[in-house]
Structures are given as C-alpha cells and as structure tokens.
Image (cartoon, rainbow, N blue to C red; front, side, top):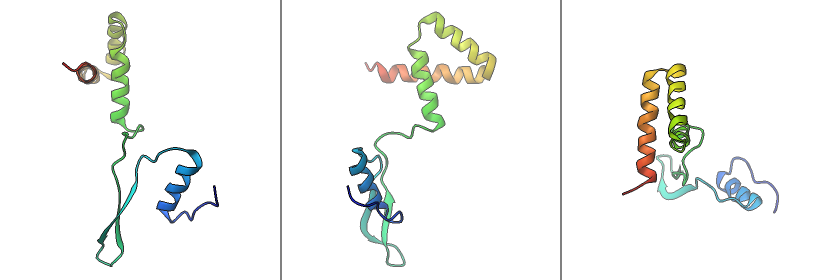
Length: 108
C-alpha cells in the first residue's frame, strides 16, 4: 500500500485512500491546463456523484421518503405530530416534499 502521502498533496491523498480502502472517490480533483493569474495550475473540485448526506435538503428528502412509505393512518399521525412539534408551515412543507418524492418514485 505504501507510505501515507503528504497531506498537502490532495491528489496523492485521494489516490492513496482510494487504493487503501477500496472506495471510489465522490469528488475528483480536476487540475486542468488553465493557469491562474500567478501562473499556478488552476484546480477545482468536481461535483460529487452522490449528494452530500449531511445537508438539511437531504434530511428533508429522507424524511419525506420515509413518510411516503407509511400506511395512511400512520402518515396522518406523523403529520399531526409534525404540526404539533414544528407548526403548520412545516407540515405543509413536508406534505409538499412527500408529494414531490412520490412523483419522482412513480414516473408516468
């Protein structure tokens, strides 16, 4: 496996951990031929292939997919709990997201 890479060499670190743990990287450092104003190569992180799972948007989508799979009475009880804990607006947002997830999961 070799020695650990220099932590300042991002590309080497990504390659090392990909080999060491057998995982594909979610974001690849893209170093192109373009140069910055000071002559250094331009570098940018490419868009990850999977969404970040620690965002509020991901949490909302996961909650909506969970609620979508509940039986009707359980779903109604869940909505009532959301209304009581988070308010009417949060319940309306959840219902809208559940409907959106339903359309995504059941294309025509």
